[in-house]
Length: 131
Image (cartoon, rainbow, N blue to C red; front, side, top):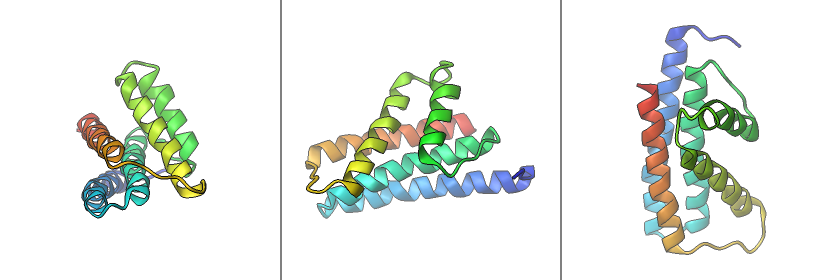
């Protein structure tokens, strides 16, 4: 579906707002020792910002792995963004899948806090690309 520029820009703002909301949600979840749910929201914060980036480039996909693959191909492999951001989204995607679908997964507070910091950096970096 082709979106006109105005609608696309509004959707980009909306997706970045969702990403920003995840930052607050994750902090709340960490403070309340809800680490598995925090892992989910960390991933989704990054995912929403990638949706915004895709919209900027007129790329849309409802498939998580396709969107991540597009990001890696168009931003990581072309050196438009540091490879560490590809590693961040890939790791958070893997952990989110484990957290949501694998039994008996648990996470330590320090690990989740480190991922939270990476999520904030990821979202900030995507936001700077969008400007």
